[in-house]
Image (tube, rainbow, N blue to C red; front, side):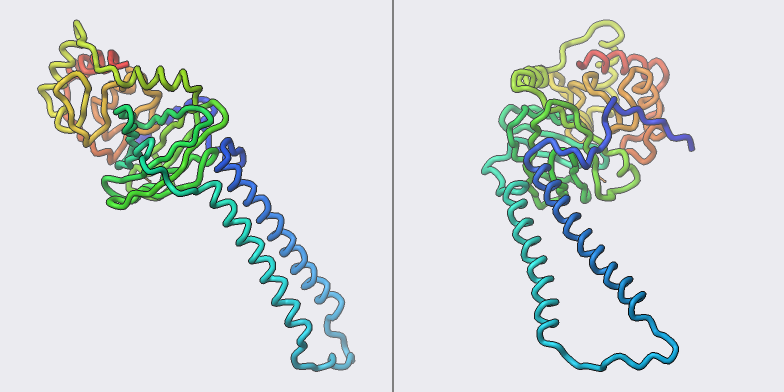
Length: 318
Ligand code: CUA
């Protein structure tokens, strides 16, 4: 089986060591402090062992060392030092948790829904439904509620926040913020089936004005198309597409599969497996199983003409 070569947007790699939010920075700083403390412990313990091995090795004819049982002072010292280290780490961790993981807001700003194998982002305030691209206004902490419709998934954007599991029937919460404008790659970091590896998403952090403009654009229903695109729309409604997908402005309103109202504005198809180009969309419609084996969309055995008409329609859905 030939797997497609994924084309990721420029710069979209996970940068675990470059935090861009107070939450991620707190976790990163704690990681550095822990690494230094643990590194020191390693060096001291390993050093003492090596020293003892060299200095006190067994020698021919040497007398047995002094045998002694118990030493109160040593026992107190080697209990107190680890206790102090553990207490220090505990205090630092508790402090980090108050920054990276404060209690959730009473109402979430975004509801994140994990699906096999894509992400849905619902903004309850405005009614925006986005797929695999989560836009956030710069510098503002957002309260996210994580749900899943099927199995465990895990939401992770290392530059911006901690990991959090999306559990079916048990909402979890996480805070998300970015201090730097940019596009961040997010992944699912808990095995969730065949295409777990292709459950990418983007977090787009942008100034409030851009975020508002994006929100307005997302709220627009699909316009009625002409020409081949109109044939595509007719096909879309006749075929079983509408049993799973929604396109605002048409009667299609199922929410099993990704909302397609703005599919043409997305960077990637199949949660990151290929770039969103008309050619890749054609390949997808021709046989989704060939592009993303195991994906829940079956092969509908569409003719080339049907595929072209559908692509013409989807390309109008900006
Ligand atoms: Cu979803 Cu792994």
